Every structure is written in structure tokens, then in C-alpha cells.
Image 1 (cartoon, helix red, strand yellow):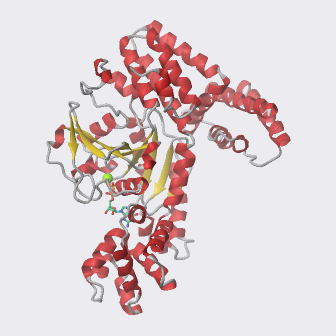
Image 2 (spheres, helix red, strand yellow; image 1 turned 180 degrees about the horizontal axis):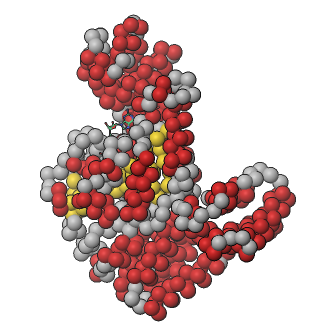
Image 3 (cartoon, protein in one colour; image 1 turned 60 degrees about the horizontal axis):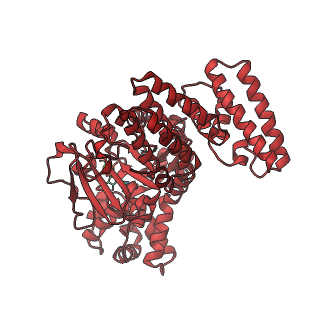
Length: 522
Ligand SMILES: Nc1nc2c(ncn2[C@@H]2O[C@H](COP(=O)(O)OP(=O)(O)OP(=O)(O)O)[C@@H](O)[C@H]2O)c(=O)[nH]1
Ligand SMILES: [Mg+2]
């Protein structure tokens, strides 16, 4: 049995700790079924933040997963395994397991190139999902869940994806698992399951129904709505955008991608704050050891071709591999697979400017060109920095759902009261604020744009300067502003707001009041 202290060692922060304590305290006061659910909530609270990578079929999800982990391990392109949910989590030894629907596990050997095999010599229908334990440091505080493409979801994949996102424990735990005697029924399991955060991958071909598809995906998989607090989006395959198709790009691919990403952000608003362009393929090749000395040498050879031949090669992927030139066509095909035409042209350009460039330096240039650094920075800012709040809010939603699913009215009331007591504490107010923010950004409570933005600002950061939108300003100004806004939201809550708006306004008022108190205390 895990104790509260065991759990706390791995908790993301004070909010998670508060919710964990609530679960531990309530455990003896609820039915066995609810208690089993609470144990699952506790287990998840102490695990790293679970981020699902979601998006249309072939949008480059697995490629991006590899780039983020820094290792080519997720199968890309074709094959059965791209149609399975794969959870990448931290482990002390690299190991891949197939989990079957009945809870059985089977170790899966890596293939010759160190990847998860693309096809399984197993009855595919019996397979629930894949668990990959890797020693990569990135996974210490993020569990990355690669999902099948949205467009590819047949009924079976949908069921698998729904069942699996976040539900780390298979339907039947193995006998050596201490908790196996506490069977968690489906209702409870569903109440706890769900990725806590989402990374949406879109491409240039984003369609009007993408927004809808992504909303459906979160509804089916996350225990609560995705909003800018727990969702980020990337425009992948930025290299394939034809700059001439985007006005204002001045023929520059990256500029075209940025403009397009801005447009897509408007479509996906308010679920995500913005959309970052990225070239997943370049990132994967540069980050996962895929770029070799031989590749650098081949690029240098290409850099010496005469201008006419070079122009011909760049016409298309077909021309690149088939046009007659000194570099063997097999070598060119390999470069194409690793870098695609844009990456190759960028690399050749770099070599022409600096012929002495080493393979290592060239790799770094490709990495810079991929935009991965921006995605990593965003992941840090949005997910890692807010993991505590995101996890605690998801856990609280699970606790509420578990209580609601209970037939015992007294139990329901006890859980409800305990949550109210928790949320009334100043240190837990951030949770209430996150909840309000999610209500507003998901459209469940409508607010005028400027107020919605203010809620997002106050609830979206833990930094007081950012919360007030006055970073770096003198303390006195911050104090005065916090007090003024606290007053404004209080009167908005009492006059002029709808009942739903009023509930949100009370929360925002209190947030400003607490900020004011904190500032004065300093
Ligand atoms: N040019 C280019 N190709 C990319 C990029 N990212 C991925 N690809 C290619 O797109 C194809 C699909 O990539 P995957 O990573 O398998 O896409 P996925 O979304 O995981 O696909 P499914 O799981 O089958 O839905 C592969 O051939 C990748 O090499 C990119 O940034 N640029
Ligand atoms: Mg895939």
C-alpha cells in the first residue's frame, strides 16, 4: 500500500499535494469502489504529466514524438503500430511491452534499428496498447502518449484510444501488482482516465472540421476540457509550405509558415493560445542521432554541383533522386528521407557559405532550422511549469466524477464538502481559478473578449507581474492595480453579470484580492 508520504515525494507541487491529502483523508470515509478510484487518482497524481500528441493521420505526430524524446523509437509512416496508442514513459532500463485487452503483457524486442517494431507478430485485435519505458531524461517529468491519427480512427481504434489515453493501468492488473485486489470498475476507471494535456499537431491542410475533430478528441479522451492551460498546438511540416501561396511571405518558407500558423491559431482559438511552426522531420533527424558524418559529406558533395544541375535536383523529390549527377542516387534518397528537399537545400546553402562546417555544426544548424527549440520552450512554459496545477485540477475533476458515480448520497456530500473546504483555502485558490479559466476558454461561460482575456491572463500564470499584465513595473503600481481590479470584479459579480459569469467573477475577484494581499505582505 502506498502511503501519503511515498506519494508526496513525486508530486508536482503544493496543489497536487493538497489534492493527494484530500484523497488519503477521504479514503476511509468512502465505499470500497470509490476508495479504489481514489487510489488510482493518487497513483496518477504522483506520475509525470501525461501529454497526448494528437492530430490528423500522417500529420507527423510520431516523428515529433521522436524529436522530443531525442531518439528514433516510434514507428513512423506505415505499419500497424502507427495505429496503436503508445505511451512513452521514463524507466531505468529500455523496455517495450505490448499490453493485451485482458491485461496480459508481453515484452517486445526493439527492431534492428532500435525502434519499436512496425508490425506485430501477434493478434492485433487482442492488443490494447504499447508501453515503452525509456531512460531518456525528457520523460522524467513528461509521459508522452503517441496516438493514432484522427482521420484513421476506425471503430476499434477509437475504442482503444478512448480506453487508453491516460488509463495507464490495464483493465486487469497482474497478480504481482499489490493493488490488483482492488478492482476498479469501468465507470471509476473512466472517471480517472484521460490525458492531462494535449499537443495538437496540425499541418497546412488544416480543415474547418479540425477544430471539431480536436474537440471531439478531447471530449473522448481527456477528463476535462482542453484549454490554453493544458493544450498547445504546432503547425508541422512547415517545410512543405509553398511560400508563393501565402501573401506577405516574401518567398520565405519560415515566414510563410509563421503567417499560416497565425491564421490557424484564430481557427483553433480559444483552445490554444497560439500555433508554433515546426519541421518535425528535421528535428527528428537532428535530435535523434539520425544525421551522420556520411550525410554531411554527401551534402558537401552536393554543394559542389554546378548551378544548373543543382536547380534541376531541387525541382521535386522525384527529380532529386532520378536526375543524373555524381552523387549516387541511393545516397540522395537517404538524404531525402532524413531531411526532405527543404532541409537539404538549407544544409547545402549553409555549406556553401561555410565550406569548413563540421558535421556537428551542420546538425546544429538543421536543428535551429527545425523550430524545435521553440516547441520545447513552449512545452516548458505551458506544461512543465504548470504541471502542478494541471495535474491537481485533473485529479480534482476525477475525484468529483468518482463521487458523482457513487450511489451513496452521504458519500457524495462528504466528498463535495471536502472539496469545498480545500478550495476555500487561499493556497488552493489557484485550482478554482484554473477551473474558471477553463469554463471561459471552452466557451461554457461566455464573457466579453476583453474580460475573457483578463481571466486567461490572471489564471494562466503563477507570476504576479504576468498575472497583472504589468511585468517589471514598480511594486506600488502593482498593489494599486490589483486592488482596483479586485473591486471591479466584485461589482461586476454583483451587478451586470449573468449567474454563470458572476460565479467566475467571484473567483477572479478573490484572485486579485489574494494577489493584493501577497504584494502587500512582501
Ligand atoms: N517534409 C516533412 N515530412 C515530415 C515532417 N514530419 C513528418 N514527416 C513525414 O510524414 C510522414 C508521416 O509521419 P508520421 O510521424 O508517421 O505521422 P503520424 O501523424 O504519426 O502518422 P499516423 O500515426 O499514421 O497518423 C513520414 O513520412 C514523415 O517522415 C516534416 O516536418 N516535414
Ligand atoms: Mg504515428
